[in-house]
Image (cartoon, rainbow, N blue to C red; front, top):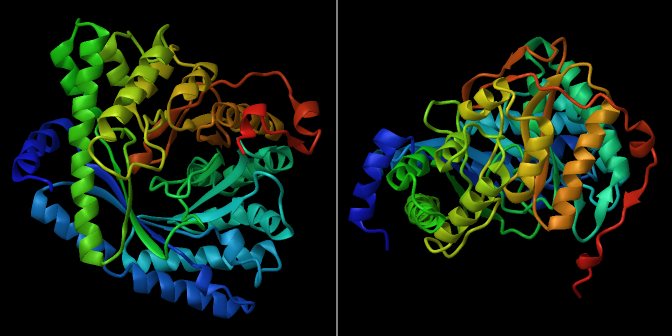
Length: 454
């Protein structure tokens, strides 16, 4: 049971420290919508989403009113569309019609985003997977709420380098298709390794085939709460520091547990997981980078940053798992550049580079996230960056991701403006040396030796 005392205790965190529930994400299986007729498939998908999700936004608003807990986003994730469209779609443009249907359904039920315009190709690609991947630029440039993800690697299967190479092209084409708005389409596209089936956070959310017909997943947030708590142990040793993070993470997660249970009951849909991830926003005081500074760094990116982030990530998980029986998704500390004012400041101070960010992703969730780079970055360089990050996930048995934005027409020193929670980002420099011969080899990087667990 969640006590009234615990609810009241959160009021200060909400009012003064930017605590919020970042998202209620309703996962919906579209398996029963599959049809060989494209028109009928689109009808089935629209009807299923609007029927199951019709009360999601009203229920979220009622929970906000009842407990005074801000719920920033109400979202939907669906079964990967590459699977759902495989019987009816015979071209990339056929898949784009499904993106339009998802967008229309999301608008009609009032959610912020719908995730699952996705393909799972860690070991190989079907003809239909390739069609969906090639359709992504048009799909994301012609819709507002659709989010796309492609899982190209895993610890068990290795890295599909053919898919990695293709995604370099897809990212650049998406940037070109949305160049009039700072290539914003790329903010809605993520490439993953070890993608979880139950992630509530966009753009990587999809409803895994192992999930029930519908499920409620909740993502909590609260970098500002953690930052404020750590001010109380300033100058003290690491044991006290970790204990404070754990206690704070416990409280934050209990808020998410309350929201999840209430939403599950009101919607009569099973509760899935709580995702503990510390997800920042562009708001001042709601920054993971500022937590790292409070731990003792002048800027995120200074020597000691990776160790501090490892400490933070581990302590958040240790505190959070005590607060809920069902913790899943990504559950760590996000380090997006554009969505975190402290990270932006670190880039401007030249304390934080792409290479340092890559090192930091070894110990946190999720990866190279919301990073703007020059618009003339070669497609093969984008693929090489993806390959490096996928390797970190594969070897370390963790989820990693790349959400990179080559902003057409902009160069290092310029800024890209995305708006809202997506924020803005300084254009970061990219290593100038080529990797064409590497990414053009084709085939698959084999799974590591420790993948053989059976």
